[in-house]
Image 1 (cartoon, rainbow, N blue to C red):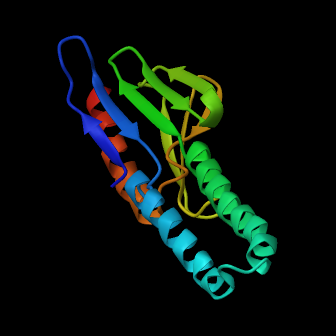
Image 2 (image 1 turned 120 degrees about the horizontal axis):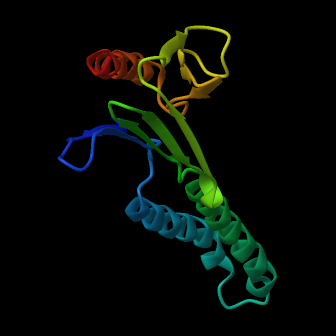
Length: 162
């Protein structure tokens, strides 16, 4: 599961840490680029030593650069982290989005309502927290099943705070 419950301590209350699932780790990124280079360069072996190679080489470099930039952009856009902190006096959600954007939400846990929208949201089983006059999404990047499991766990924590 791409989320974990951090244990509470004397200074830190219970905390939920969420992040999007990465199917291609950084190590795999390097291997994928190397394999892409090898497979694209394979046909170039036939024209090795001829002037045609110099005509095809820029297209090879453009293709590899395009794949590199697309995967890099995907990694940057996937740098989303959500922290949900459970304290007796406040429930705080901090979302660190791509390119350094940060959004904070805070409400009294006694009045917070956790809602699962099976249909009608941007994703199936859309999970929201509503309180303090605002409704915020929680874990929109998780799979449907993960959001169902998360709903039960968060509801348990909320019930324990009340």
